[in-house]
Image (cartoon, rainbow, N blue to C red):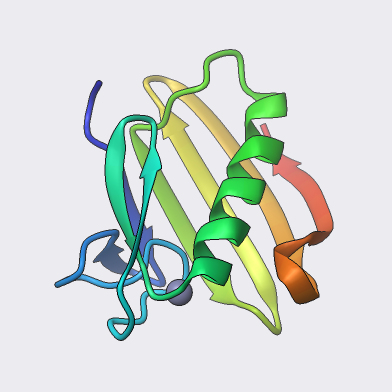
Amino acid sequence: MSEVNIVVNGREAGSKSKGCALCGATWGDYHADFLGEDLFFCCDICAAEFMNMMDEAFKHTARHNVDELHIDGNYQLGRNVLLKNGEDRLRFYVKFGPGAVIKEFKITDK
Ligand SMILES: [Zn+2]
């Protein structure tokens, strides 16, 4: 399994020293497995949001794999995400509601 490179608001994320794989925060200590990789999250909510987001994103991709994930935004504004997998690109917008549920999800470019 290749490494998943995650960039949150322009900064590398996904490990304890770099920050939460969804919001970039460096506090907290929650880990979750994603595609065989150990990702760091600030809390279980961010982890649940991330997993829900990727479940939804993978409905629109041929292969369930990620080389790079660029996440820009925050909880209030929602997030614009670019998923790169080899030559494939998927761009989408996602906004969460309370309890890590997806309130809004739309493909913005394919
Ligand atoms: Zn977080």
